[in-house]
Image (cartoon, rainbow, N blue to C red; front, side, top):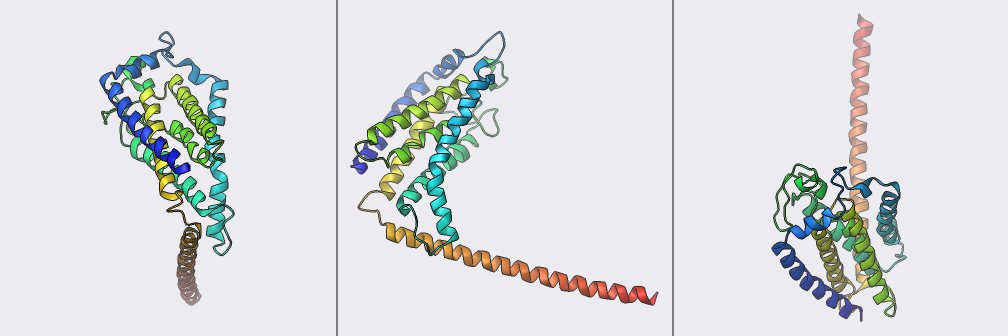
Length: 278
């Protein structure tokens, strides 16, 4: 059942990506006009961005994905620290959750796109009292050098909650996935209202992240491929290898420190003898 759901969502994300990409490429100023709704021209700012209450809501919302990730991360770190202990969460689930978070919000959204696309944020463009030229989503390169607008990193994190939603019981999964989309959309809407991202930044953050989640679900959780015993054994071998490498590194560092100490001691004795002769 989960496989069909994941496949359907993956194809839907790809189809919606093509449609949304075409519309927002043909009418790029949709981004500007939506952002303009929340811009105060007299104050030359996005006023909601400085309100305490909305910033508090934003911070609380940003914690939710990390809290959902904590159990899987704990299970993985426990296995790495104690390789011979059995994992408290199914290995495939752990790898699916941690891997989708790393590949989706981590590598794809924040490292690959945000750091290299160069799209200025709404508050940075000339239409909203900034100095940079507006860039449509499809045109990389701009005045922004790092942590740029495309795509929305916080929205990507929020849409990632589709991963734990996919692990809900089949009868609850539609509601969980719907809640994940609503949550991601709400977080993305806040970023638009704050003047930190355009509509297209949020749309593509959601489509890309959910597509990655569903692709990894098909890769790791499909019954035909899922093998928790083999995966746990792989993690165990990796942890043992890590222990050996760390042990060898510490041993080497200890040897170097011992040699350095011996050299310093000999140097000290030599200086002491020379001083005594004087």
